[in-house]
Image 1 (cartoon, each protein chain N blue to C red):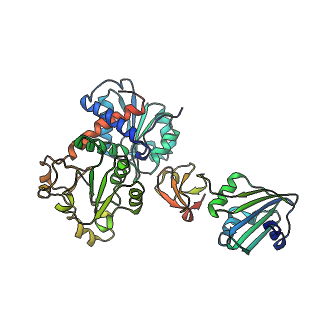
Image 2 (cartoon, each protein chain N blue to C red):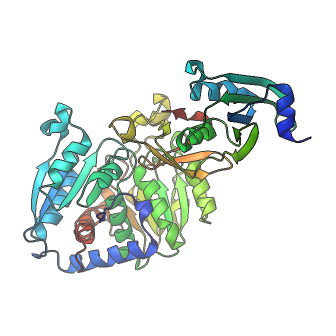
Image 3 (cartoon, one colour):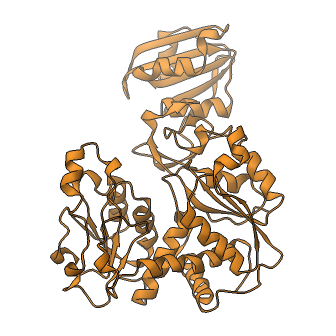
Length: 304
Length: 154
């Protein structure tokens, strides 16, 4: 029988998303247990990602599993020219579940097809990072009490930011209204605007990031505007400080507003925002632990 | 007078083999190359810029004593949609198939995304049709879309 894997947020139904979030809530109440006692988690980071790796490995450890693996392709046999398939076959004979990060898009889907044990995608190039999307959803639901009918403002790099694209896809089940706030060069790609129209998701677009624009927001999802994304450096210099959130901008915002960011943050959120109760990005990262505990148990068919 | 008789008038009749008809004229040589006709020793007739009510100008290929597998056929449909494949036995059309691009393409075209795993591992590609009218296909692996007109055959 084909094992159950977690590869792309687009594979998940509304019901599946809600049931995973419910499991994560249980782990938040009780993050430590021995339910994975005797299990081995293969943690294969063909590309370094300290934050995601530590989160997954902590999730495994807190549930009593042991972790094997590598944190960089240079220390794996991939550097000797081994195919991904061979590495996956080898590790799957040792581990009960594989968590993998890879620079190539589609690597996790392929691994899930060849592996006899479940595969969890911890990021495949610019394609998917579905556990990040799950923790974003968890954070939204936890802070707003619901996922339904929210005003979500996406700010910064909407062209290359895969987290915002995945969030857009996942939220289609929950009747959101989106507001895209980005410089001309980094605006939301046409395919996602088509996606919104096809799914009857209302959205607005602006290049201006101001108090007025965020006054109606329930969620502000900030992303980093990276210099290397610009073909014209003059353009970057012009816009780099326009998509920066400061504490003074939050004065007229809604009480329930929360600010999310996939981290790492550079200067797009001023440090004076950190003390504002509306800042939620550090708790958001912590929620990743509970979500990843839920994901590991789900692919292993362990009911909580 | 039906279509088959018209062809018979323009080019010689075929005893056994395949007639590939209604090829858009500008796709004719792509189909010729795809079927590797230059290396065939069969008797082949190629018609170019023939008159067609449906297409204006069309191409036609008659190949004696050669019949095509489903795999080869699905490749043709990627290069030139809606061509008609006639199987001829004893001067009669025994089967007429209008080729439609399949809903899934297994190992027929290459993914245009260089960072896709399929371009970096010894493995088969897999596309699904996401919008038939516009000719949009989606890679099962990297989830990127490409238009059939930009697709490169494997």
